[in-house]
Length: 390
Image 1 (cartoon, rainbow, N blue to C red):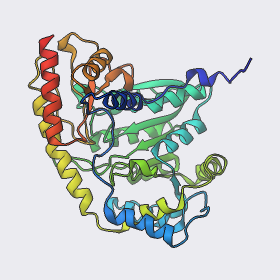
Image 2: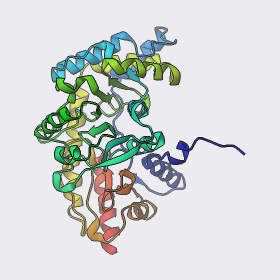
Image 3: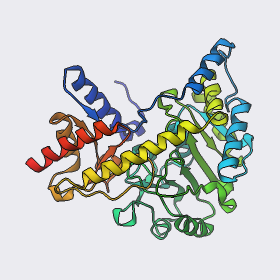
Image 4: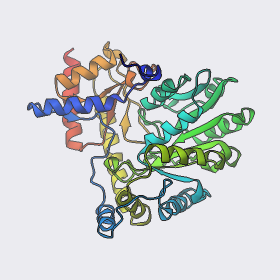
């Protein structure tokens, strides 16, 4: 009889991919499905980026690269962070990785062990909790509350720290709620962390260019007092519509960087070469496609919130970032995961139940507005009809 280590009994998954698969299966049988479940831009990767990858292939970039990523790309990441935020980052602290999840995996693996505690947003990206539990560490939810605009509370977060705390995970702009934490709140968190010098921080900033209503991104890179224990997660998937390219980057403090490099050597060796040249073009080439995409997301955001608030028993605050709405469906009297399933199997609208993002997600569902305005109108009309018919 085969035996695996106990951690594999605890590992979870990201249910958005299960919903995507089910939606695809229903569509293959002829059902008309509108997918508001998966979190990926519906725009094509800009042409200059794809052409850079093709050129890299033609130019013979077919072999291994350094485990940390090609130097020109690491330099471009550092230059981009300086251009956008005035943040000074050495290319020697940048690690190119095959997707944002890899940074989560590496950071949580470094700090998670039985007896340790890791704080994470709830509702939040499901892989946070899954990986924490896999390591044997205790997951400590940081409540992300609707009444707080789906931003974290510094006071509440700091109040969860104990002598067993090893890592705090923060995410703004946030998945699944679209919340953006104000600078004043980030300031309070960083100030309070002075009392906890042995606690590391992982800041998931993958949606840093997707903000609305005049909001400006607050990167934790601009807090020198925590730079020696800060891990930054970012990448190309959302900003440049490159989800399938599997590209991300992280910035590590010097004392952790070599550990991350060794994980790369042991696990994925290196990121594929042509994709790295595509990522280089993404950062150094024209940025107009990003602005156009975010402007369209803004229009969709306003549309989806307006239509959701027109459904009896549903209310939705205005998200300030990312491309998700997280409506409150408590007044419908329905459980969130069951409603999400019924919407897919019935009127053919794919959404994700709030509990798939954490124990505090009950009473909410997540909608991605990374779909056309016409599809959003049709999907919300179907939802309205289904929910109001009871």
